[in-house]
Length: 233
Image (cartoon, rainbow, N blue to C red; front, side):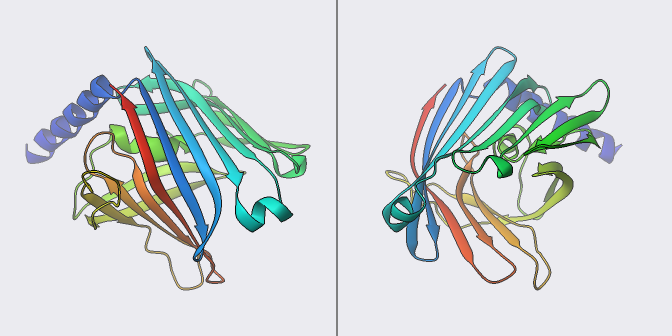
């Protein structure tokens, strides 16, 4: 009986988030490699009825803009369901490196996703609840996050489908004026030598990453820090 009640509670939380999700979100992130600012990332989420569009544009700054002046654009579009985002298309475009650009077409009826990387194409099995690299960060708006629990979902990461699991704890305050809101801290708890992802997630609506820290297997650290957030309810 307790499990049944918990199940109804989770469903209610997800359905409530679906009904209350904002119509438009504009977020600006600063991207650092170590202590050096290397890019500014502009993201936008738009919801129209039961559909959504997501875009992310990364533009290099400083020395990177001088030596590698390349804009990277990522787009995701699909449906907004009672379970959250259901991507239908995904595009990752590198302005000066077509061989590393990729796209994905999701077919939920067939349970498959067609992934294209450069000139190569393959078809993968599509698990229930799968997200792409961009929609995955906005899916947190639609699923309950609580300290002492974990969050798991399949993620299309490049040309493969991987299971993402994060353990949730209370996090530090987000350095976002004017209120410095509280966060949840998510950690994928990687093994030594593997890449590690840590996410500081806003507790208040919209539940989006305030900070993402990615530590590569070789020790290189990238940090994406939220600088500006505009929400249209």
